[in-house]
Amino acid sequence: MGVVTTRLEDLVNWGRTNAMWPMLFGLACCAIEMMSTQASHYDASRFGMELMRPSPRQSDLMIVAGRVSRKMAPVLRRLYDQMPDPKWVIAMGDCASCGGIFNNYAIVQGVDEIVPVDVYVAGCPPRPEQLIDGILTLHEKIRGEKLKDWA
Amino acid sequence: MNQDQLVVDKVNAAVPGAIQEVVDFRGERTLVLQKKHLVKVCRFLRDDEALRYNLLEDIVADDMLPDFPRFAVNYHLYSIPHHHRIRLRLPVEDPADGPETLGSLWPVATWLEMEVWDLMGVTFKGNNSLRRLFLPEDWQGHPLRKDYPLGYEEVQFSFNWRQIDARKPYAKD
Image 1: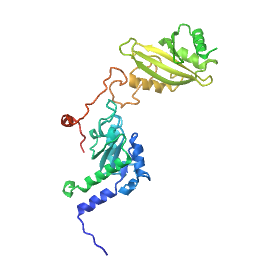
Image 2: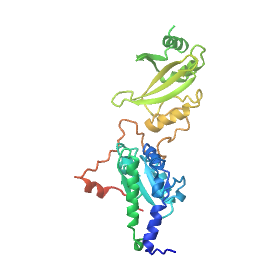
Image 3: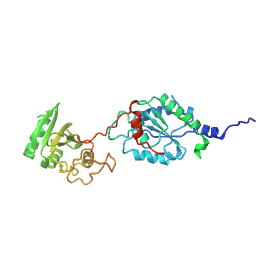
């Protein structure tokens, strides 16, 4: 029988990175790239995210894929609040990160005005590789989390 | 007879003086009407056997800001039996005193008028459900008007990154 010794911190972080449940939050054209990230060609389940959950209560990663209108903003915040801790947000694409080409009254200029964003993925829309890179960047960030910060 | 011409003749015969002007642009015929004749003309266009404009496709409004009358409401009608389109155009001087609703002729008009009111602020007499349709319920103003501010935000470049970053309203956890 093999014995593995590790630190609790590492074990928890490993569990969090490799069993991430993203929430379906496709808002615009970026959602198409998010879907293909999930599908067989790019296969996000290689990185521990098996499928998108349609409910915020079952998910811990929100991928905001697309532009957020001012009318959608309260809904987005509400869904974020309904997600159980710990939770992370990826702003996918230019529109979610900073408003993109929609510099006008109707679109929120960056989803970071509503929810705290962990990783910004640039691109219009970003290719699935870029989104996967964003997810891996988020994994790196989570692996660096410290037990003393959770308390 | 040409359907375009038939419409003008028949409307002139049925409601004399309703048509102020006939405009042809790229093969599309527009009848500029007086506001008070709208419902009468529309009922005639819908019910007359030779015309039968039984589909109200869209209602849109224009804002021609420096000009007067400032607003114009356009009705796009389609005759399914005769495969023909016609556009009715109504100059509106005062958006608070807009045209009458067409909800009694085409129920869908209630929604289309709601959309026009939401984005352009033209009211429709007799339409009791003018409320926010596309915009959030607490929205101020009508954003498709030409005097509505676009709400531009300054773009963040490397030289002004810090100033904008300092005043950007970031969300709290």
